[in-house]
Length: 421
Image (cartoon, rainbow, N blue to C red):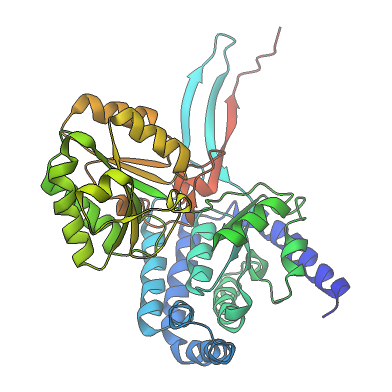
């Protein structure tokens, strides 16, 4: 496919998505739920055909020398399919935000003004590796009344197209335009560039993947982008912290799943308890295989901590590596977080109500935790049911994005013939 054909294909898909989204916005909750539940059933029926298409991607990946971790993310195993099915059913069970009316107020003029929640319109998703994102993103967008244009990585093209075909079969059976959910069938990178220029048809872009992809999308897009570049999350252990709690939260935040964006990358410890706390927590972390890289003071307290290089501070390791710094007070801890954090997740362990409230107020992150693991920054854990991603931007979403974040609010006005004087 030459460059002209690529542009024609993507522009037409975006235009069709816009048209389909107009109809989706007025669908009843019952119809949307029927689509989601029928898709879940069809996924189970089509396990074998999905496995055949997925194997094409896996074979190509093995030939290209993809790592075992990458191949694992690419695989549509029975477990992954079951998870997609469960996700569809959970989204169907969630309250529908579309049409919700709030903040009704009577004005002196006689009019009554309120807000109604409405779909964003067309969501563009650009993502890497995991083909299950095709179903997860489409489910949330459909429930929120949005059309969705999906552009997955070239390594998952057969899997993504097969999953989209299942969704489109269900849409057609329900009398809904298939263009409501589309996967761009072009692996050439030019397709992304064309997609990011369609501000007439696409309302928001959500990229999911590595920092390089997200920065490219943000720098190239003419459409608003909801994103987070990386998750550099910190734990601050205050001078009056419960030390057992601090150890437990540090271990969970770093060791449970070190390769995710809400895992801890740094630990700050108040100097008043460092001599007691650091040996305890470092012993457990190192026993679990964590390499600790620390400041001069932390290295003196625990010989097993290696000196950190300047480039280590603020790094998202996504591995069993963690930086450690001893700080003299909470102000120094918060200054460190301002400099090296990524506005993703920050945690304080403290028994002081005053300190905890100040940390909550002053630390700028999409989620700020008091005496709880950073690993809780997740749509499911927050009661959103599911998430399409985590945003560290503030317009219009901050933190995990669920159904409500895939909508906006318009003003509605009731009157009885009032005119403005």
